Image (cartoon, rainbow, N blue to C red; front, side, top):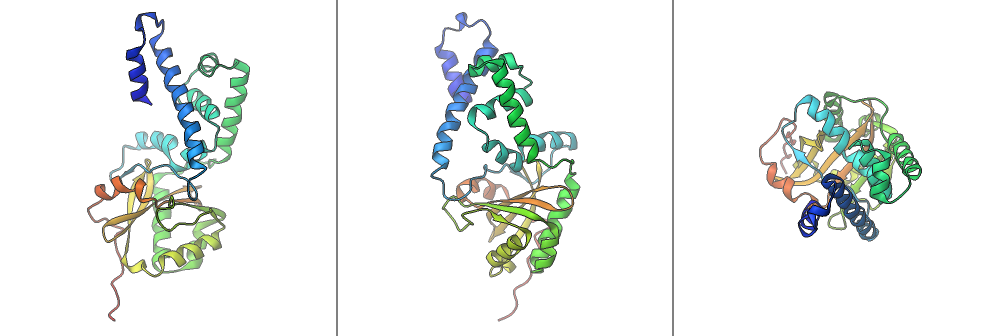
Amino acid sequence: MVQETWLRWHRTAQEEVRTPQAWLVTTITRLSIDRLRELRAERERYVGPWLPEPLVAESSPGADEAAELASDLSVAFLAVLERLAPEERAAFLLHEMFDSGYGEIAQILGKSEAACRQIVSRARKRVRADRPRMQVTPAARARLLDAFVQAIRARDKQAMVKLLAEDATLTSDGGGKTKAALKAVHGAEQIARFLLGVLDRGLNELEFRAVEVNAEPGLAVLAADRVIAIWSIRTDGARILDLYSVLNPDKLRAVTTSLSRPSSMANPQPKEPS
């Protein structure tokens, strides 16, 4: 979208543009809305749930930067945005993230200020309803993920259930390219049973590596040095409210090449002698 906006800017009569910034913001917003509409049609044909491509790093940003990035880029937040209509998403981001006034948004979207106020208010309520009310520290997230990995390694279903909220949800994005649940799995018992069933046979060969996923603590699941899944969570600090698993290999190509060194969570159990 930035590239297309840049090209259009160089094709336009710039001397006739009174406010370049307003022109650029309006152009890229309208292009993005059109692209979101196209993507919505494409994702109706997508196999199983869709999750955003994860941004993965092994080193953490500074604490202040991490908190700001995590609130804007978390998989949970992006998944909520995906449920908003294109114009609703644009209006919400312009107002909440870029501090655009309702008059400016009205000009960009070609709607009245009153309509834009209603759109932003509706979007804000939907986003807040799906976000934990309390701020969770990265350390708390990391401890919860570590305990969850230990419970999986021990094949301790009850320990897994205790770490999951009773109404927790597991969303798996395989994109039809690999085995994944075609619908979200609901409930702590069901999630624990599903994960143990999927992971049990090759569990001793898997490595669970602590990484930063969209500026929040998450996990990379590796088999033979190849990333097969990226996990991130939504949590209240005490329980896992939602678990997001990106398995689509098209979304993991860049991640596999960047994760090459061992980590502290890479402790696969030795194979038993045959």
